[in-house]
Length: 201
Image (cartoon, rainbow, N blue to C red):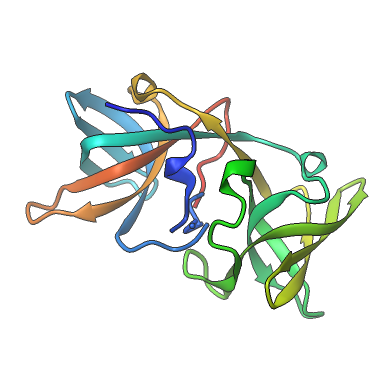
C-alpha cells in the first residue's frame, strides 16, 4: 500500500470538495472504522448504517487536522463550503486550508451538493480581516471574487500526512466510494480525521 499525504483531499474537493473541495462522482461515506481485515474495512457510517469498504490496490491515505481562522493568511489557497447570506456574502460552514502543492485545485465558485443551497469556492485569500469571533475574507479566483464570513461555528481543517496503519478501529474516516453489485463499496482514496478533528463533508 502506498501513502500520499494529500491525494485523498483533492476534490476532483469535492469538498476537489472532501476535502476534501470539488465534487466527485460516487457515494460519499463518513463514519468510524469498526473492523479491518486485510484490504477491507467495516465502517459504521454517520447515518448509522454498516458499510463494507474495499481499499483498491495502491490506495492513498491522507489526513485532516483542526485549524483556526488565524491560520488563514493572505495569499493562502483554501476551499470554502458556505451558505449564502441575505446581503450576498457567504457564511462558511467548512474551510479547508490547502497545502501549497495543491494551489489551483478545483479553482472557482460552484454549487456544493453536500448541503442544500450551499456553494464551494476554491480560491486565493486576497484580503483577510481578523475578528475576535472569526474572520472576514475576500476570495479571488479567475473571473470573480466572493466575500466570506468565518464564525466559530465553521469547521476549519488543514491537510496532514497519514499512514495506512492509521486505518484501525475507532478511526474517523471520510471518502468517496463506488458502490459494488453486492452492496459493498470500493475506494482508492481515504481521509482520516486526526487529533479530534471533525470529518470533512
